Image 1: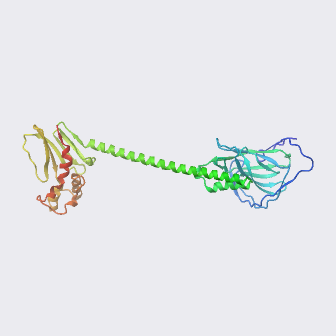
Image 2: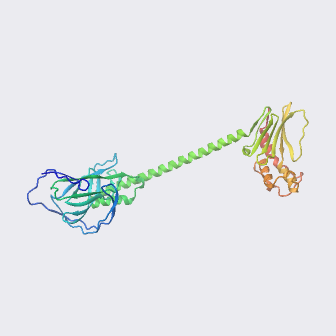
Image 3: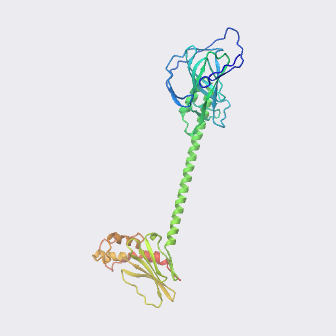
Length: 398
């Protein structure tokens, strides 16, 4: 028996298995192929480019399978590590045999590329659907289509090598696998004549693998979201703590004679001016108006408590020197003077509101003084309490 070489670009290579012919009378097996109307589908040509092949609808004629049929060796490419033992790949061969009969055949090919037999003729071969391994994992074909021509000079028993382009399969994200993909793979195997029990088992395994992947993806996503939320909360807490520490440090005033902690809420809103170790003033950064000041004087110096607009909040005395805390009472100025039409400071309403909010740590504003008041109304001095209760207690005399 001679070897026959076919053009590998379109025909493959014929390989003689040395099978002897069995007499002049061939045993004829008639295979009735279903009537299939084949539409257009997208393929990958032998040159690796995508194209569209039109298969006009036609009645599929009975195909006579005898010694003129040839095993077609395909090149199957599966991802590394795939357990391909016992794996069946649904493959579809479409074309015309040598007697001009239309052929549309779906068969189950093994992972080694064997299992397809064709008579002389011209065909296109492609994966009919995705493939399901015995463990339930699913693999999607790349859409390649292989042209196979078996000419009259190919001798009976020769195996046709159709390996110029592989039928390649790739793994998919199983959490995204659809029921439709699984059904198409199983339906193709059924069409190929695979036992219904085996097909049902593969379907169940594929669904189980998919559902497990979905559950794992959900759990992973929830764990990731929880970890990200925790990390965000921790980062925000740290940023807040760092900001508070920075503000506290910036608002700590230290001189040779005393120290005091100003409100951290003032950070970024005031300027602390240290004239000397004996004199420190705190000013609103926007208007440059004084809010509070600290002065060191001898203990023997006579006390001067000031008036309603600028007065001493309190003092510390160690017997030789004392440090006095003074405030400019903008709430009192606004209630007594501004609301009575005497705006001696020449400030606008917005500035007064800002100064009162700073003085009271945001607890009061100009809205708390809708009408003019005199100094007999104790509300006039309500803006002092924040200094008395929150700032003065931090004053330390050295």
